Amino acid sequence: MSTMKPPDETQGPAEDTRSDTSPALTRRGLLARTGATLATGALLMHGRAAQAQSAVPGAKAPRAGRDSGSVVVPNGAKLPWKNVGGVKVFHLVAEEVEHEFAPGLKATCWGYNGHVHGPTIEVVEGDRVRFYVTNKLPAATTVHWHGVLVPSGMDGVGGLNQKAIAPGETYRYEFTVRQSGTCMYHSHHDEMTQMALGMVGLFIIHPRKPVGPRVDRDFAIMLHEWRIDPGTRRPDPNEMTDFNVLTMNAKAFPGTEPLVVQKGERVRIRFGNLSAMDHHPIHLHGFQFRITETDGGRIPESAQLPETTVLVPTGSTRTIEFVADEPGDWAMHCHMTHHVMNQMGHDLPNMVGVKPAGLDAKVRPLLPGYMTMGQTGMGDMAGMHHMPMPANSIPMVGGKGPYDDITMGGMFTLLKVRDRLDGEGAPGWYTPPPGTQARLAQVDELRRDGIDV
Image (cartoon, rainbow, N blue to C red):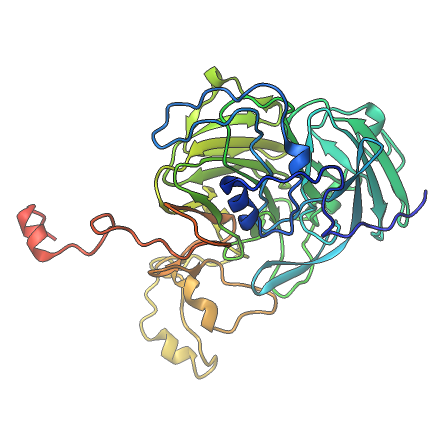
């Protein structure tokens, strides 16, 4: 097999140079701080208008004949392509990548095109696509198009559908996309090792003729779990139960970028889960949503469930949609509580309820700076930023919030909804209007309402 030079990651799409400067798409472009390029021409839909918008207060009316626009991948990138004789040609390079999970925590991983996770692939139903896969790893590999309907010989299972791609070789995959929805891709050779080291990515297929209400914001998030012990520099692929770094698009809070939208916009969030062992119940504060797609495609409207938490099983994708009708800074996180911790382990003693009394003073002559922690829970761990830490490790919880430390880490991010978006990037912290924020109760209020504390 020949070796092909990887394309410039900043290269834009070569097929269609039409642009859309509508306010909604311009804002999307400003917010796509991910190195992504807008393949606008590839995403323009043909044919009929979107179906009528559901009756949701503050929702915008649908626009006829439009797809939802380019997907935004927070903290991520997209895979560029070029048109060769009517075929969309992509190039994936499997290679070792130095990756930062959060400020203070880095590891040597395996990924694609310099990214962990691999760049998101974005195509349209009916496209003919060609993927060149170059292996720059020290081990053989393959690519499996997870959930994508392909001929057997293109399915990418090493030894079953093809010979594994040896180091230095480049293989070609080619097929016609026959579906729409949110799929994934990953190594299917020694997948326990290679997926645990980061060789996964999202594969998003827009419908040729869209159905359902038009969305204004379309986000994509890959969920994953890792074992990285403090002081080490590589994820442990042998771990089966005790994962201590839980990520969204390969970032753990406080390294996660927020999702930014304007009030009244309809939002779609696509979740893919290629964690080794765990399902993830992703809970969104502030909104009810409908689960509109699984990895098998769009769910009929009559079967879409209203939820505030979506369970994303390992090896699956789920898509939710809602109207962002309430401004604020809203938490979105896995509701398995240990999944919003960083580098936590099972070998910690249970200190809850311990009364150390004068223990700290007695221990400090032997261990200067010693401080007993954990006797009232893990909330104090958020304040460990000023304390000495083991090499290549971060506090178990916490990032700075507008009022206190936020006592969550790991698989946690923010949805920022604003009445109006000005300029590029994420807005600052939300300030609740007077009378809409919890506060310290006053003595006269307690007396008035007959509350005896």
